[in-house]
Amino acid sequence: MSHCLSERSIDHVVLERGEVANSWRTERWDSLRLLTPNWQCHLPGHAYSGDDPDGFMTMPEVVEFITGYAKLVAAPVLAGTSVTSVRRADGGYVVVTDQGEWSCATVVVATGAFNLPCVPAFAQAVPPAVTLLTPMDYRNAEQLGEGGVMVVGASATGVQIAAEVRRSGRRVLLSVGEHVRGPRLYRGRDIQWWMQAAGVLDERYDEVDDIVRARRVPSMQLAGSPERATFDLNALTSLGVTLVGRLAGVDRGRAQFSGSLRNKCELADLKLGRLLDRIDEWAVVSGLDGSLPPPERFEPTAVPASPALGLDLGSGEIETIIWATGFRPDYSWLDVAVLDRKGLIRHAGGIVDSPGMYLLGSPFLRRRKSSFIDGGRVDAEDLACEVDAYLGGKVASRN
Ligand SMILES: Cc1cc2nc3c(=O)[nH]c(=O)nc-3n(C[C@H](O)[C@H](O)[C@H](O)COP(=O)(O)OP(=O)(O)OC[C@H]3O[C@@H](n4cnc5c(N)ncnc54)[C@H](O)[C@@H]3O)c2cc1C
Image (cartoon, rainbow, N blue to C red; front, side):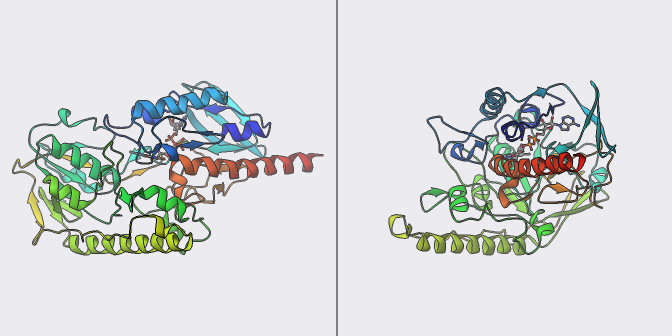
């Protein structure tokens, strides 16, 4: 956004509580790599130019990519500056930070959508002998005790951590609710390539039937690995991970799993089939079909014949629970009445329900890929036009 504003000669500052790329430096586990391939790492006016376009960046590489970009575009970043309050004043905003106050006509909220881990309230009922971790506490399997581990949630974070912990030799139970299945490679190309080419990632927020639901869809079960491996439930089962249903509650020390595991898996298989149908149709229409390997369909997800419906958490079988149950934004500093009942900012494609305020970096903000780095790029370009028009209108009305 800073680069897009600079291109329009719009005077601005970027306030950052940590250092540039703070979330990638401080909030991710050690082995994480981007799940989006390097060729997809675009920032406004800047693309990945290394020699491994199909690879996946490690966290130090992401930090280098983003800090290098901040220098390249000379972003006016004030690091070590925490915003503690934003409120409306005199037709604009007063931004209070731990380093002083700013007055401005417009504010772009780009504080991230994944600031806090979501942990269900019933976590409190887990017996105290069981260690509870979130993906933000988890760094690597060595920090865990030797006992069994239950990973709750089977989206991108959950499947990656479950696989890593299982490979460390520990027993792993994976609690599976609604999830989105995806192969890493399809017909010889990366699934992200297909979704980009077939227009899936560019679907707009005002084109989908139910944007509220679309914004809540979990992340696809993908990981970036040098082997370009698939991380679906069948892959995890073959590693020796045990699947159970969604963790519905904890009652008197007993975990209760939903009986819906088979249904959830069938639904994910069905949706994957629909995605692949769409991709194959696009391949025909685009004339690529003949030059690629033929369409494939994957084995249905193998579900245990009678998955456990309960587990005594006091038995010592499970020593650690990792809540891979999603993340949410932290707007505790925002003193403008723009939050809905779920604590999310009300907006239309990033134009917030308060004049001169904009949102960036939120799931399906303007397009399906909005929560990816590449989505932030196009959304920033769109929203910089909105900021420009808003400021132009203010100048015109003053004149
Ligand atoms: C585990 C995980 C894996 C991911 N993998 C990928 C991937 O492979 N590819 C991909 O494209 N995307 C991935 N994402 C999504 C990724 O987070 C976004 O693409 C990207 O970080 C969005 O950038 P952002 O600048 O909007 O948000 P962030 O990177 O979260 O940056 C927000 C910044 O705001 C700062 N901040 C927050 N509050 C305040 C405050 N009050 N005052 C001052 N500063 C503040 C934070 O310190 C932070 O630096 C992943 C996300 C997670 C959680």
